[in-house]
Length: 279
Ligand SMILES: NC(=O)c1ccc[n+]([C@@H]2O[C@H](COP(=O)([O-])OP(=O)(O)OC[C@H]3O[C@@H](n4cnc5c(N)ncnc54)[C@H](OP(=O)(O)O)[C@@H]3O)[C@@H](O)[C@H]2O)c1
Image 1 (cartoon, rainbow, N blue to C red):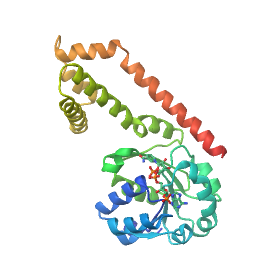
Image 2 (cartoon, rainbow, N blue to C red):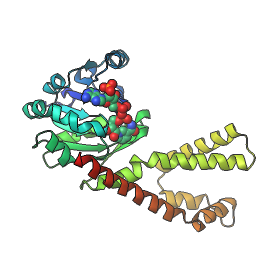
Image 3 (cartoon, rainbow, N blue to C red):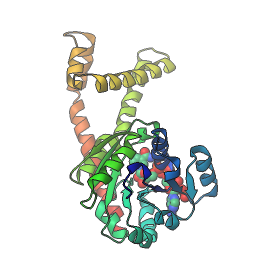
Image 4 (cartoon, rainbow, N blue to C red):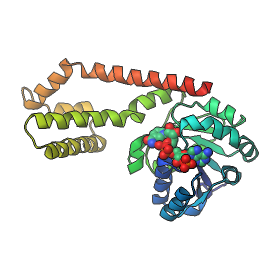
């Protein structure tokens, strides 16, 4: 690593949705384009990325790793084993900080595939990172320095909030809350939209009301000095319309449903992790 975090050369292996969200965010936050490299197997994608983002692109993963301070692995989890084995020698010579954004692959497995002994950070981002409003759960193995944590915090803050966890198993909980969480809120928006239509609103209008209400509630909850429970109490007058709806949710066991859904998600994350590590 260089002394100045701004000068660290960041190499993305794989230039798909998540990688481009992250380097796009880094550029928007003022990270120098000349310090970012992305690799892709496709010439068309390389041309598109260099034109759109002004960063350097390369076809050769090994050559890219040879000049990296930080390597961000951003290919699909199923491709990670072959990729890591192909990078092993170059990584062992250069020994960059390795960051993986792949779902389901634990730090020890990745470190083993890469030859071992590396400083490695596992990151669980979510899809709203694509619009700069993501959240990333991060776990660092014990070889990662405070300076490296700081650098990765700065890089990922450019696409949203960053939360560090102390235990790697907590990444499964991160997956269950924020990783898969956007889909839960989409489901609630879908349900609210359908309910609006059922109550007699035109479809487009029902959608606009549902989406803006989700956005407004999230913005208010983030900006308020009160927690969500207090905000809910404040808009729920005794014997009013909201109270009637909240009672219906409570009687139907909404809290229990959320508990069971997130447990199921965390269990699936553990299963996937076992499947991927066996490969
Ligand atoms: N999207 C999300 O919301 C999200 C959320 C959490 C975690 N993640 C994680 O982020 C990772 C990437 O997901 P994604 O959605 O960004 O997938 P994606 O858009 O398919 O990007 C993966 C990229 O990897 C490239 N690639 C594959 N093998 C390569 C190789 N050997 N060398 C260089 N590039 C290679 C592919 O490009 P070519 O085939 O053209 O080379 C593709 O563009 C996954 O591990 C996923 O688990 C994504």
